[in-house]
Image 1 (tube, rainbow, N blue to C red):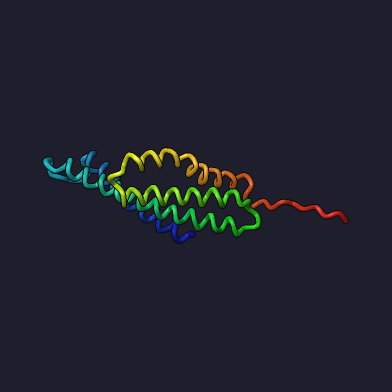
Image 2 (image 1 turned 45 degrees about the vertical axis):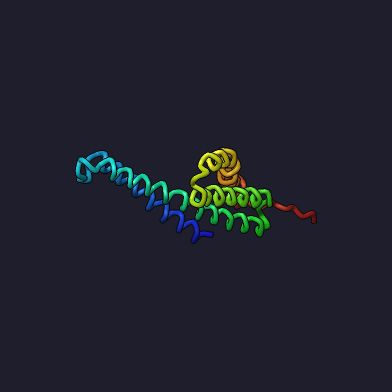
Length: 144
């Protein structure tokens, strides 16, 4: 699971680097011939738009592995495992569809809008649960 998170971060960093290059070109920090500035910016933007969904597929597999670990845990309620696995499958399906079925962009965008709330709830809700409740086992008082 941690390895998938590291791979996601590396791939995402490569995508972000494309956006940084766009900013440097726009600010004049990188010398590019005036007639190809727009084309170069579009190339970097297209590069980011290709890398971003791929990194989110890797992130989906990370969430899936996290959901499995949550199921195996004795200290975390299985509800979070279900939510994380649902979010993971949503990430994988939506961003995989962007690669495989790019001609169905309207359907994919609609599915993404519908599934964004459960995906966000899975990630952010579990993070808040970890901050508030995580790592604090229930205290069991024994009657003596």
